[in-house]
Amino acid sequence: MVGTKNSVLTLQRKAAYRPKKKPPHDAASTNYDILSPLPSGQERAFCRSRGKCHYRTLTCPAQCAQKKPKKNRKQKGCFIDCSSKCEATCKWRKPKCNGNGALCYDPRFVGGDGVMFYFHGAKGSDFAIVSDENLHINGHLIGTRPQGRTRDFTWVQALSIMFDSHTLVLAAKKVAHWTDDIDALIVKWEGESINIPTDEEAEWRANDGQREVVIERTDDVNTVRVTVQGLVEMDIRVAPIGEKENKIHNYQLPSDDAFAHLETQFKFFDLSDDVEGILGKTYRPGYMSPVKRGVPMPMMGGEDKYKTASLYSPACKVCRFQRRSGVATA
Image (cartoon, rainbow, N blue to C red; front, side, top):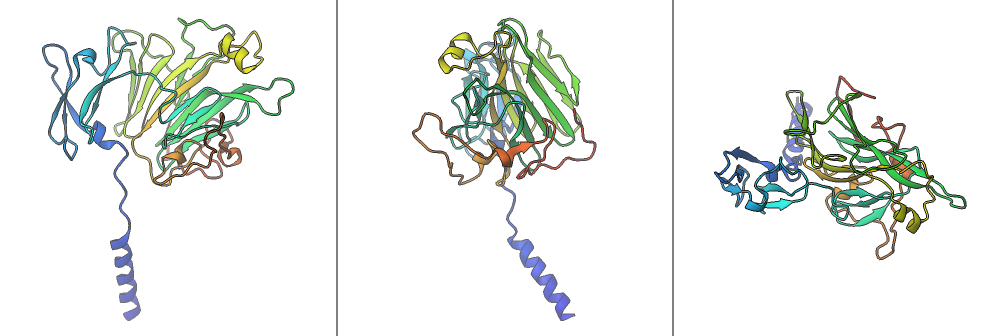
């Protein structure tokens, strides 16, 4: 009896000192209710987050009256932030390749810590960009290796976003000759191709009763904002390698491939302290980047740790994501 009693007391002490899960990243930013707009058309929100913004009403500036501009999707949208910033501001709804959470170019990252770095990878390969308890994002690389080079030039051609039992894929079509007004974006939900409308709300939605997914156009073609409720927001643009860029970097691209790829900026809402992935680990509290500062191309290694078997595989040496039942694949 004494041994049993001591065991119970030990378990109770462990439970008492068990660390609590920290609140979701940026959860306060979106903790609000939408109110009816002013007669001027300016949208408003009633903040429910704790702190100085608690129960305050924020109104969009006249310069960007709506969160989602409908008449001209190219213009800035209103961003409501109910966190300690407590403000409504105008922001472009396109990826900022120099902002935190950016993944652009060949491929160049800007981490959650604000440190810029490059990642080599290899053409035709897939790598874990983010891997956490409830979210996994892979990137598929395309590329080329000119004669005399020992490594490939690579770009991210597709992203696979896995969460719960769902899979969402966004990819750039292979384009021989780039044309600005032709859509080169591919979107797949649970392996089925979907079309994002170009009129009215210009958005596509899915809701399984627990989490909503929204994909909205932020330009007429090739640019979208993807929101997976409570997990991640992504601004994505399909871009080609232009002739000038090809010459400057000596990519030596073939004349029949524009190497269309994705430029992306991520914003995460519920990462754990143990998040993994090429980009994911830079969001850990106290993370110290190992890349060399002050050099033109600071390199991040780890190809062996982050390589996955396919675009749809959440498994790598350090990956953390576990599928729920009802898994959806390609």
